[in-house]
Amino acid sequence: MSIIISNPDQRMAEIAEKVKHGERLSAEDGLFLYQSDDLLSIGQLANEVNLRKNGKKVYFIENMSLYFTNVCEAHCAFCHFRRDEGEEGAYTLTAEQMFDIIDEHYHPGMREFHIAQGHNPHVKFEYYLEAIRSLKQRYPNVTIKAHTAAEIEFYSRISGLSYKEVLEALVDAGLSTLTGGGAEILSERYRKKMGVGKATTDQWLEIQRVAHSIGLKTHATMLYGSIETLEERIQHMIYLRELQDDTNGFMVFIPNSVQPASVNAGIKRRVAAFDDLKTIAISRLMLDNIQHIKAYFINLGTQLTQIALTFGASDVHGTIVKEKISHAAGALSPEGLTRDELVWLVQGAGRIAVERDTFYNEIKVFE
Image (spheres, helix red, strand yellow):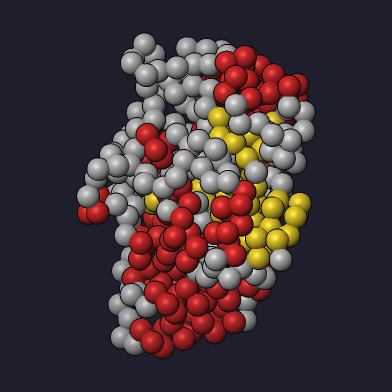
């Protein structure tokens, strides 16, 4: 689908009228915005929507990213984190080994463990359950955010359990929410071309639906900037919007730009800042029923994250401590930020920093 607009100013004005009156944008509207080079108008509309939804508040959390294993059966073309069993650098940690890593950085204000890892077929589902169970027993006050919908599909396959049974077992062990990963681009053309050897579009969406049906609030991502079309990006957002209409289970949308293979990659191998800001803004405009759009500083870099706060973003993620997946590729950002740095980042953009828990309950407002 390609839209030929004889009068782009008039088309933008029509979209602005829709935004002003809270009307839902169509796929054609979204595609027009992507094809427009009027970044400031798009950003201004997204800022208007975000201020209506969240005021000047921008949220962050004291969290820590954990990685139990980087062994993975999938061979996604964009991933530089994964390893094969026995390959140099491959690891699968026990809970006790993870405790040693956590205890180097743990403090009483830490509210969330964000677990990201490979689909390791060399351990049983019980390994993943025990990891959650052990963390919850040792750190009972920390919320466990773990497992993508793609991982749930993988666990279902290796255990013989249904999606619902897998999710209920994980919740029983101490899981509170799913991460948003594994979505990449919700297009079978893209998934085949990029070798996404994990959940299909329909499976990813169905698992999120099941998770929402048992009371889990979850996250959703989009990995953009490789071979997907603009139409596929918009369709990805519409799939999420339609599911959210049914379940109201997504708390936040996180658009992430794909990282090059190396920190030494030239600028032509990186997603343009123009595209990053446009994607944040269009996400805010298309996803009218999701409360928050996240500007993920790991992918955007800290300064572009600040600018994104006037392009529709209302969340800057968290302290993280030591991010590994984007940094296994070519991310140039810090591996983590301190609480004070996150507050500075938000206030430097003229916004109000708010420390939150996993579910966007406010802990402290930094006026």
